Image (tube, rainbow, N blue to C red; front, side, top):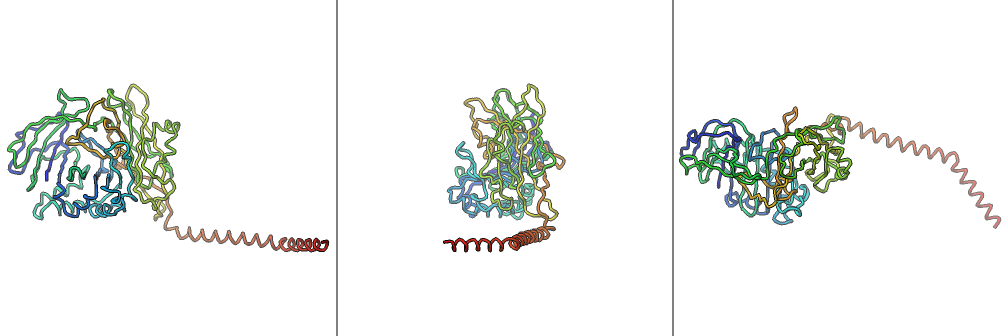
Length: 500
């Protein structure tokens, strides 16, 4: 088992090595402004037997949770996803896609994951494009972290280790949480990050665990290539080093900071076909040395969806400052109510069309969406939450540029597999609205359960009255002319027979 604890500061920040006190397996330092990332790497044979058996049925499994609370992302922790619970999964065999084992385990660990099995509840990803995509995707807006934290305490913390229990409790405050497994490495990586804020430098090693601690900041050495990020700072291995060592290194990264922001709102009135409006701060590409185009990646819950046919009209797209629909998960039933849909929802990737101007300017894009019929509710209205998308500029790196894995790399994000391996993602920071949350609320009219009995009774009465009116009209017609016409017809037939 290996552990890496990293405090990351902005460029220009630094910490004196003499301020770090290392004694045994404990490191103490001053209070600094930094983001924190904790990563625990566990070999599969160190896991409980039941979890080993479950992971043995997967080729790869990636769980990514992003908080709905806004946070400042700093280099090199720049990769973004829409807020919520994301899962990317490739089964070892297709038979495993029909097994409920994964969903049962997720419910045990996270409490309320609403899936049955991968084949029925997940959407498929286009693996024919680039080999680093997982086969299935699942998304859910809210999960309960209490069972997961309790599970971590049971499996990793002894009953007397209060410090370990306190660290587990801090997972509820994390900005992001990643759990990744692949059959090649035969290891599980659990990574949690906390936002850029004032915090004390403190780390403690655990028995039988190699603990490496870094206090790093972004840097720009002279030899840095355009596609690289530079890092410098101090590193130490607890229980091994008596003092920290200076370090400086650089690595290629596909995730960069566009140094601009965006916000999201729905145009009023929303109705049953709401329009989502993206407000972008800058129309200028983040780099002039490559071709760049802005994109928005959405994970829409099953209460709301986009119509791919509507998004195929070039003139309509141009009027909304959209270039084209680059991807939408399939199938998307355009007519089914929310309460009969088994799949989690849909994801889509839209290329945006910024105004052509030499100067940077703010601009907007509009995305037409459609609400499904929802379950009846008391009061006649239901609120649904629509998460912010991930917005980024996709830029092509120079021919021959390679992006090997780096210490802070994130892959299997849903959208990265929809681009070529030389694509660099320049992320735009989301800015929340008045709710201070990366989500928008829509009030949807539904059947009022308080008045449902009147509706069903009134409908039955209307059908009965309509049927009675039809019978009455038919009886009136027959009583006036029906029998006379029949008698005349019979007399005419008899006259013809006499002539014969």
